[in-house]
Image (cartoon, rainbow, N blue to C red; front, side):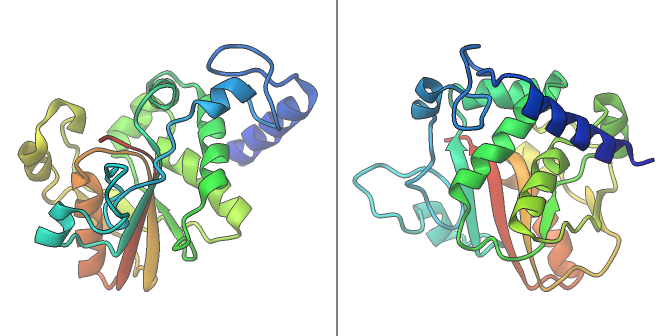
Amino acid sequence: MDLRKVYDVLGWLGHQCLPLRCLVCANPGHDGLDLCAVCYAELPWNDHACPTCALPLPPDEPAAACGACLREPPRQVGAAATFLYAPPIDRLVLRFKFHQDLAAGRLLSQLMLHAVPDFVQHPLLPMPLHGRRLRDRGYDQARELARPLARELELPLWTGLCRSRATMAQSTLDAEARRQNLKGAFAVQATPPPQLTLVDDVMTTGATLEAAVRALRRSGLQEATLWVCARAP
């Protein structure tokens, strides 16, 4: 029996039978979400950002490639983050990622579907966890985000990338140390399709996603795009 399918069915039944409750303030939910209308109105949408790395831009600047991308173009051809990593999204991400709050993950996926980037037309690749971290956590948060996205958008979910080496937690490192930490961290287990959209929860420096794209390009990937739930400014 596929326990993940059982969880999906139970989650769907619970969502149909139980009243919606805002996961931020505990007031009644709104519009089919475990989020009230007031909290929804306060979400930090990242709707003015660099189209290549999703870095938020000042309001008075055009939504064009940022200075960093112009100086050193990244390996991806496009990137989008649904939100800024700011309240209340940051708290929902932390609950989902570190406190087994799968309801928060379900809400984040639903919210990502409210702002689907135009480039999301190819198979989705959730960023994998190393096996040791997966055992400790019990689930892969990127896959939990990507599975409902793929289902709702009727796109394939491609999982041919794995973490071949356990690395230090990126959150403890600066930008250069993050890049060094990820050398040789990914292995490609199958020939990738020509285009992929990589899905993750949070993008900070982009080092993890860059390392994954580098490994995929060596194995035949032609074009990569990135879609994350939140972008750290």
